[in-house]
View 1 (cartoon, rainbow, N blue to C red):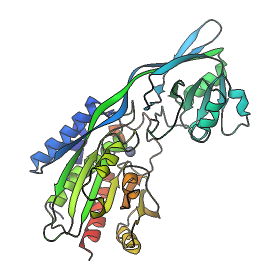
View 2 (view 1 turned 90 degrees about the vertical axis):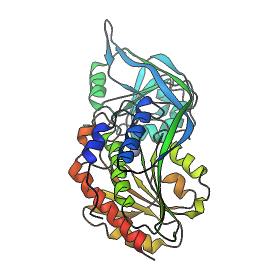
View 3 (view 1 turned 120 degrees about the vertical axis):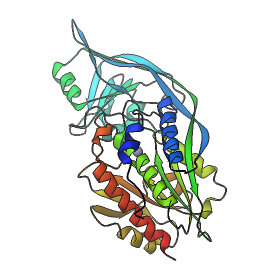
View 4 (view 1 turned 45 degrees about the vertical axis):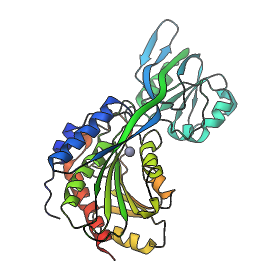
Length: 383
Ligand SMILES: [Zn+2]
């Protein structure tokens, strides 16, 4: 257990930023990880799949006054259901949580709303004939981006971008005449892959344990915490676990295309020869931020409920424990009857331009590494 040399910083430095699913950067990141593993004499293999994904061609938000217009910095809201995107110009409306508004006022307008309104009233707004969306980031969170998961049913003709809270205030105070919104993208089946390391049990196997971290990030976001941190941690885990006795067959998986709706992890589950052999899936997502407590979500799929909680309790430190399903790459597993544990630090700036590589604290990440190892040692050594 003391055999590993933390090389987190060098792994992180070698990973490209803005790793949109199916992009060259995502592919490059997986190759960098593979090279690092090879340097430590750990074999890995690619598992290829194709995903309904997008490439952004153009996007903008233009704010027009009587005699002038201003381009507002924005990011596109990625559609991934075969939508090529579109452009609209017209009146606008602020649908804010704190203000009371009648939804019928939104008809034929470009709607500016916060994430909660967007999530909760999306379909309703569409039904009232909204022509475009401007998603406003939370206060002090910079410019945030999001990708609409594959599962969401949505109108193909409605474009959307996201802007920062500060820019929303500018628009609100300047009372422009119209907004013009453009979001153009190429949608299709692009290739992505998972990278897998298989470490067989030292003796008789008690089953499979899968430990995963996604490598992709949302469009336009470096994704230091989400999830270069988890991907780097997984490299260190692979090095540590390869030198230990193992009672389980361990698979370490760097998943592609998480942000499109857990596509890589779903592909792994769908192609597993016998998913009932998997006793536990551990997901490492968004770690490394300083002074943010470690959240551990555990979901016991079978009767080993008490055990899983007990093993999580050995982690200690700044961690908090909750019995619930995760909302990332562990979901396809829990839906298939696999117990899951998710490690996460609820950093407020996730999916925002503030989530850069420099937002990761290697000290915090090293602490998390020993916490995850403590949990794994406890789980894997129990009878
Ligand atoms: Zn993530």
